[in-house]
Length: 116
Figure 1 (cartoon, helix red, strand yellow):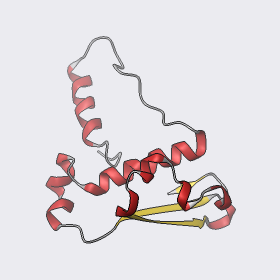
Figure 2 (cartoon, rainbow, N blue to C red; figure 1 turned 90 degrees about the vertical axis):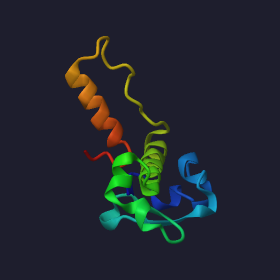
Figure 3 (cartoon, rainbow, N blue to C red; figure 1 turned 30 degrees about the vertical axis):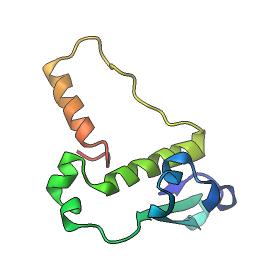
Figure 4 (cartoon, rainbow, N blue to C red; figure 1 turned 180 degrees about the horizontal axis):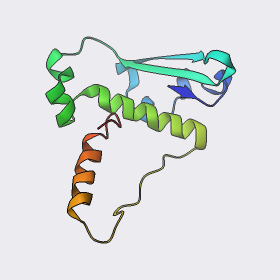
């Protein structure tokens, strides 16, 4: 993930709390982004992942551990760039419509990777 901060501003021992919570279960890499466009921050889970945890049904059910790590990376990016993680207003409308219920279901399912 590319972050709009200089590489010297991001220290491995001072990562934002969403990534710090993983402790030694993840490995991180911090490198300058190409073309002096900030910093690339990469994180991945240590150790082998069971195939069942990476399957399509696990992703759809929200049980893929990588989805949580991707969410933590997005939140860390927001914290490093702006100092806060923006959340949508809840509830977004005063009355739920059938279309709104469907959109809510899809957005909850996409929460781990922001992809429907």
